[in-house]
Length: 259
Image (cartoon, rainbow, N blue to C red; front, side, top):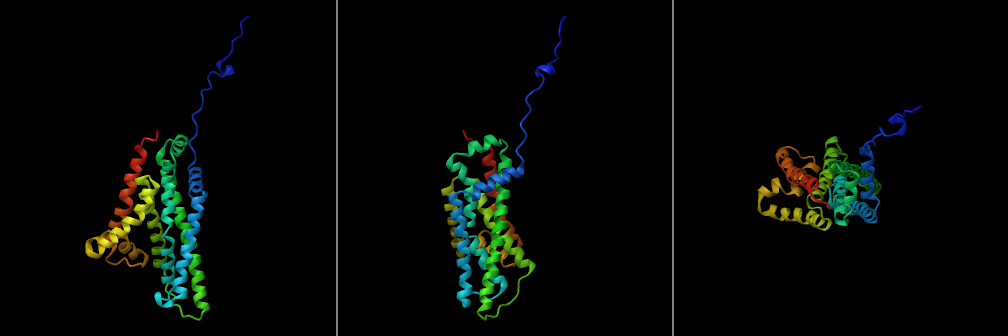
């Protein structure tokens, strides 16, 4: 008498299942931790907060230096935020290349574009969180100014709020773009300070540079909600500082050997 055994009973037909893709939400959580949970990131975020509070103290303590309006105080907060917040975004893009841990990341998630998208999502979350913090600092500054008996003009509009949010986001995305392109923390951080300063100096001699490339000019129009006659220049500046270097950086990330 023979006994027949099915392949199912032996388990020989149970081919190993392909690993499920890592959920994108988990990738975002991991990248958020990389951006905020390291000692360097915590110090940088603390300095972002201090610089924002320090900038807000100027119109509060020296009222003649700025117009005493709600929108002006909000713009001061934006300037304080964007002094160092782009550096946090740069380190999120370059840290793994500089520390040579990028191979581990791409081994766990071979589809590199998903990792890049997660970093972009975290940069937008950082921008939003920073903008909220800046709003809180603005309210505190306005409260202190009002408590001193100062007359403040209530001129905050939807347009002013939108310009504030876009200004913070654009500065962070410019840092992301440089980080993705250069993939070196030191080089990207140096470039994030040197390039805008260089174009600002060139802009004093060339209206073409000032009107179309110098972010201190074009993006200030965004911050001040001054879109009339400036939309083409603003869009060109965004392409120059964000779209082109980010696209080149993504292409380099997808092709670069990490061995």
